[in-house]
Image 1 (tube, helix red, strand yellow):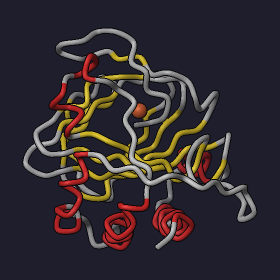
Image 2: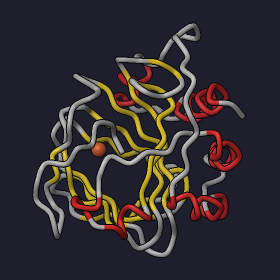
Image 3: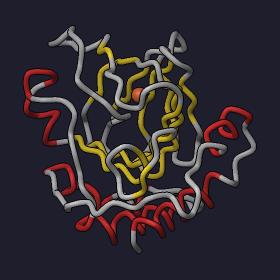
Length: 210
Ligand SMILES: [Fe+2]
């Protein structure tokens, strides 16, 4: 499954949700003739947990999860944070790969879409950004913090919307987390502001959702 097939599988999965917030994102989905980029594959330590993802996927998310597993070695996996931000352990259990956006294989300056992978027993500290965001957990049940709602357990297939500037965080337990992310609105290269790091309370350099 190439990047285009992954994007098509993601788009097909998203088409199954009837949510007004999501419609705004899908309006920005790149046209079939959008420019393509050659992306150099890059691996990360967090990929060691990817093989566990299919077993903790939902029935409807499983085809896309299987696609990511099959394609993982051909994708460019990146990190925005450094050890100074959240520590070495976080970097061993965190990574993302952009499919659509300013750097991914499908070019867009209107929408970013990709995959976030977290290993088990890790917290992605609270952060916020100007871009509006949607997450769709594909594999792994994890705790998600959304604004002032407090921590809530979310299962694969539950769409999560973060309006502009709303603080959000994720916390895995025994399962890894693979999630699809979508960003729209404003400058896709904008930085996130880290709010809730236990050991760091400074601006983070994350320029994409992940
Ligand atoms: Fe975010």
